Image 1 (cartoon, rainbow, N blue to C red):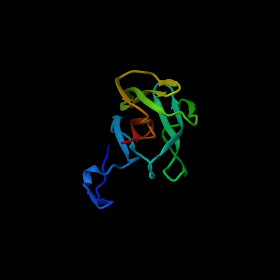
Image 2: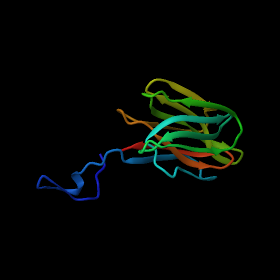
Image 3: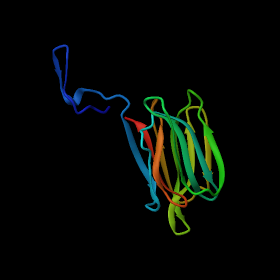
Image 4: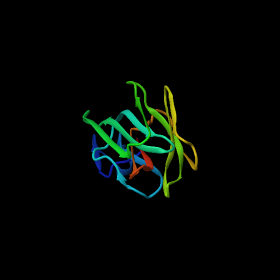
Amino acid sequence: MATAAISSVAMGVDVPVDKVPVQNQVIKIGAWGGNGGLEADVGVHPHRLQSVTIRSGQIIDSLSYSYTDQAGEQHVAGPWGGMGGNTATIELANMEFIREVSGTTGAFLGDNVVTSLKIITNLNMYGPFGVPFGTPFNVPLHGNNGIIGFFGRAGQFLNAIGVYTRA
């Protein structure tokens, strides 16, 4: 569990800094893929993922998603990448959350890109999107921790992908 960088005095007891837990701290894991394209990230940290839209054909062309922040405000991130491929949108149910993202990365038209994605929630499995070839990656989360957002790199395609979760 993460800790706060503050000192706290509660009921006359000095609690050391490394013992004050911080709830809902957002952390980044990854990214997997290439260094091409531009950085793709959100301005406001996500709290709950609502939907994910993936455009794919031979590879992952783009990714976008909607989420709410800690204050309950809705945001849309992306699309990050190009407009090719077929569109698939995953609408998460109220109690549904993403437990695992896996896929592959590899060379395509001289660039290292995300070639496939599979999303597993506590209720369903979606994909694979794209064509699985190249180097595999896997981001499993345990317990009730879920993936609450994404970041990465994108140009003409989705070059790299990483995930947001809570500590």
